[in-house]
Length: 408
Image (tube, rainbow, N blue to C red; front, side, top):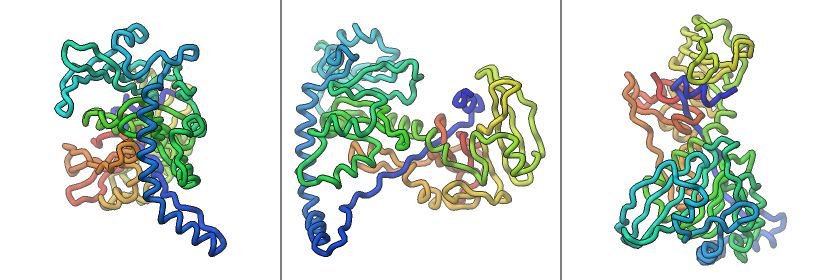
């Protein structure tokens, strides 16, 4: 079933979450002597880590001079410093191209060319308005691309979209690993959603947003530190969007989950007080309908591919404290705003900002013009998947929805 299009057709979509990176500690030893050695290593970890970061930054700058992305028999097809006209020879004109603007920090003109159909964004720069434009960074995000449209390219070391985490760590071991950190460093890399080969000032970043699948979904080559605020904001929104579909697999309201069969919902809740007749959606070509459980303030939306298919849950929402069920993390109608932020702290942040840029992004909810609500906390994205919480003027949860966006 074309589940994504069904949610968009309902115009009530949402949100996402991922597991937060766990702290990495040196494993305790059974003996006191080994314990003392471990404590000594831990005490010396900070200067070692600082030295490692310097080494990684230097390696990243060297890597950028040689690294490239290309097809199987032409791995040097795209590289930093490449002229814009040579890029166009391979990719043709972009879907959308921004106007070149000078940066206050260095006076260089920079802009982005978007190739949305294959998930590529290329940032160009030039010394002045009359200079030749050259590639400053290449950003590949395939989580939004139809699998049939993914452009099959690899880095010079053979890493592509679909490569496993361990393949990345093995291919770039000489750039990532530092002497003296050993197991603690390797364990940290296994927990990250982004593996930075180099530093924000130059290198490659591999995105692995789905920890269950643990495969590369995106590749960024260049200096992340040169991304504009708008680019960073867009990247965080895209990240939440991508995490949403994975998050939905684990979420629930009471015992109701997305993709549940209609007959299983009826077994749990009984027949609804009101049920629409399935209607064919012109936008998606699917049959959609809703069922209302008015006494407990619960609404369930279903979809199916054709008249003979089985209906499954696509959206579920609740707005009454008469419904006593909670989300998978214990949030229910009447919970406080702070309880939501605490329960979903790991899901609300931006991993790119934390793991690549090295700074925490404070989550800000969205203002909504809905009676009785002042804010929408989205664990994910309006058009992604996941869960949303409508917050009242009294900072209490007044509405919860899975697979929807703004409450109405």
